[in-house]
Figure 1 (cartoon, one colour):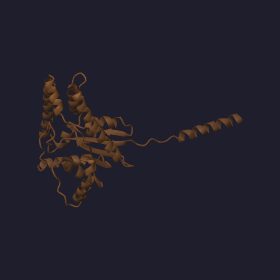
Figure 2 (tube, one colour):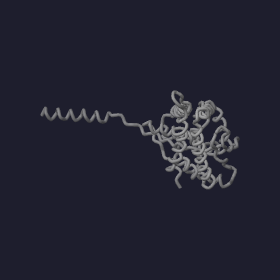
Figure 3 (cartoon, rainbow, N blue to C red):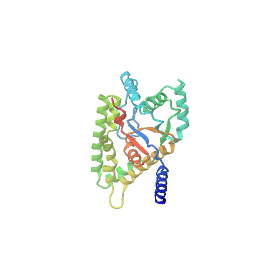
Figure 4 (cartoon, one colour):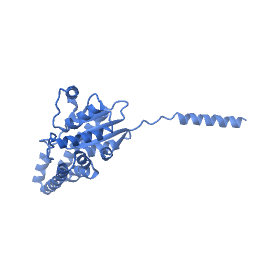
Length: 271
């Protein structure tokens, strides 16, 4: 009898140990929506064409994409605005909700604000970080050290890449454009500017290209940290609307974090 009792207690203890194991929290879904700038920045070396958001056809396309994005139902929408401008965005968004702010032509105004309103979100989350990125010393080094061929190859590659984006922009809908620029092929091309070309500029103990790329990674690590800091308890999904040149690094960081699940843009912007 004692043999059976000891076996029963062993089973009971084992069962208690199993049931006492902590239950893993569901992963937070992250939609990294890489974007072109509807009004190209003067700081960008390689630019797409301006998106005429006043065009009636474009407005219909934007609204169609907003409907697709709303199905993802994010708890937060993170935008490419410096964190120190949060109070300004809070005020502007509040005025927009009250019909006192006319949307501008920027992609944040055209996509993030209307989507946040549609979802009933109280505000948008500013996550941008302005890091240092000055390519001039790299170009000067290349010219002075017979590495101008790398710069020429980079110019040819980048020009061809942006020409492909412009071709899709001019012929396809807004959703199709966003599916294109967020495809693995296009994100890899964008990342190659840093990983294949810029890092090769330098010789011996000189690493001007690598140092420039390190600064780019540093900027994106800060942006990633700002997103992590913004996560609220109970958040199940967040959307990040950001220049698509940042997406390859941000995607790698989130895929390396077991608390998050990166959602494919094509799965959200499907017809």
